[in-house]
Image (cartoon, rainbow, N blue to C red; front, side):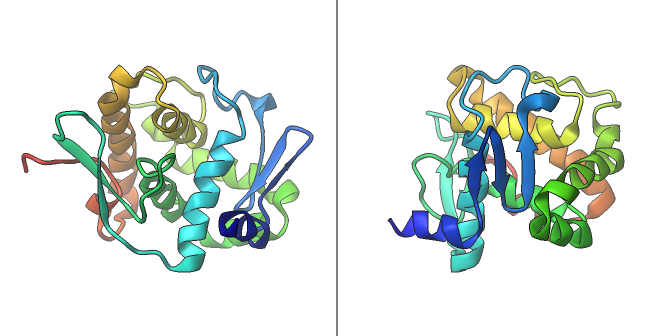
Length: 194
């Protein structure tokens, strides 16, 4: 119940197949997730969970293992059965978005979210043009990140879960060479053997 109230506070809703979540105005017509068979609104659940953590100032560092052998883990801000493995990535992606454009997108999602996504892709598009081959495919870095989060969250081809995490962490690592996010390791896949 409280979670749904938080969703109302942060202005998260879906209408006519369009999701307005954390300022992002999303439509699947652009083909954001070409190889994702789940429900499109699942991204809303991830983003709203991350936003609720920010609003409620939940800063726990819960270790969430991503494989049965407990060799790899991510830090989560709280224990969430559905989103604990991906909240860190939603928060990290937010750090790569231009502050001013993010503010405009929150206040006028229909007008500015497409611009925000396009600017993000323009700035970090080099990730897709490099020497790295990724299991999931997208024309947009912004959407590729979401595609990985959705595959992890919904346990699609669970046998590839560690690889999804590794590739998503690699994408952010490549982007971070340009940005230098403080405490970067807190947001990406870690190994228990380190």
